[in-house]
Length: 464
Ligand code: NDP
Image (tube, rainbow, N blue to C red; front, side):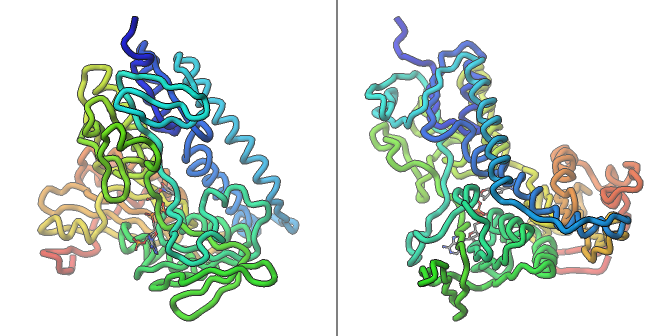
């Protein structure tokens, strides 16, 4: 008789956990997987996927406006929030079904319950009144929105979780934060006609991105009508007599809104998981500490994805899952590679980026060359839309390698995916130069910037 019920037990049915469970089961391993909410996890159920659907929905008013320049007369449009929610929910349910089907087809045991560790090989299946044992355990429980419990009135605020299920579209919203979620939702709500204010504690939104992208996005968002208050925080949030909310800000202002949203980062889901009982070590933010192969300090327990707080992105969790399966079940120890991860912010205009921001590259290399183009994309010309696109290459002058590419404008995310190959392959500026331009496209600019706009040597900007 087998020593354990399972070869692998996965706690958490998000992108990382499902991939690991499905692939390990496909290898003939006996796999159990438990999810307390819905299979698909944050990305599918209340993150990337429904967010992108909302982004599409919010872009239509600009498309209608732009259509006039191309000769179209568009009758007055109206928008129905419940229709969007219902259609989005149907699509999410379909995707959830596919996740379950994949697991089922591979032969995994799918459990719809919370799972907690009892010891290094035993899992309690909460609500089922039983335990299961496993040789290897993978924790992939993801993260949840930071509730900002220190803020008076934080319980009156919504997070991105609730934003996907609001019964009514608010007339006005105030959003705290300057990261991916705050910026994306500010654009979504504004696009849907909501009076939107973004409140960020720092000097400029999107802290970790190239300064050019941040500055130009900020300017464009403001031009569209989104109010952005930097160097400002919430002091308290209160419910008014009329049922609306008041956000009291550190600049002395009070803003009345129907919803107040907090998008202040996400924290690892480790509470009550039984980590102490199993002896699994966590870090200061509650994240599970892992080595380069995603193994915790307990030999047979592993962790991947947001719960480890390395790079909080779906494709990274999936990559970590594949590396875990190679390491644990294919006798092929594989370290996840977190270098040069392309990423997009689905703001309007969109950001797509891979590699180093100019200021980071300037610190890392003795001399860099910066190639920069700002122009009006062709599709905005007849539309009469006064919105610019930005493209920027950061090149290490010594090796000639393109170490960073930054795009702001239509389809920037799609470009970043492909540019990720070039940066990952360590291509040089000369490789970009000898690539034929594809005309007419916006992306052709990336291979036709022949002269540097400026150089940065020992951290100082110099003429080209
Ligand atoms: P981010 O880390 O992107 O941003 C968090 C924001 O909250 C920052 O602006 C931060 O400020 C601010 N903040 C944190 N704590 C406080 C505080 N106590 N008071 C005031 N401001 C505070 O997190 P998000 O919540 O936006 O998103 C979570 C993660 O999900 C992202 O890191 C990203 O990896 C992932 N994600 C990816 C998306 C994509 O790929 N398009 C979309 C959405 C999410 P500061 O900058 O000063 O630290």
